[in-house]
Length: 130
Image (cartoon, rainbow, N blue to C red; front, side):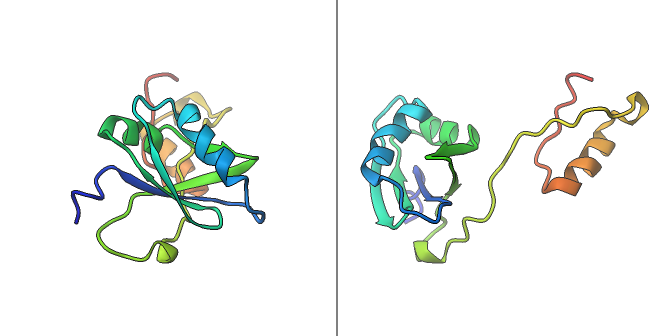
């Protein structure tokens, strides 16, 4: 059940062409710099199922992106309970963005959330530098 899904991710490469799957399976753990081996299964087309041996490796991959393969974006989702992988949306991924030329008086967390919200969903604001 849920415990078996704890260290698993499903991914889809957003491309109109089928990527070289063997190369993808061989290279992605190297790009991700996982400590332990990652088990990868092809679901269909450009959709893959990954099983990690540790939460550390899984979290590094999940939060270390965005990931690109063969000039195409790799979208990751964590499976939740039982369900059909084909029904998963694969429609969001996190990007770190930096907004320049903001007047000094407007460099607040509130303005950052507002401006970021114009681009997409804001997950975090870095207020460490101005």
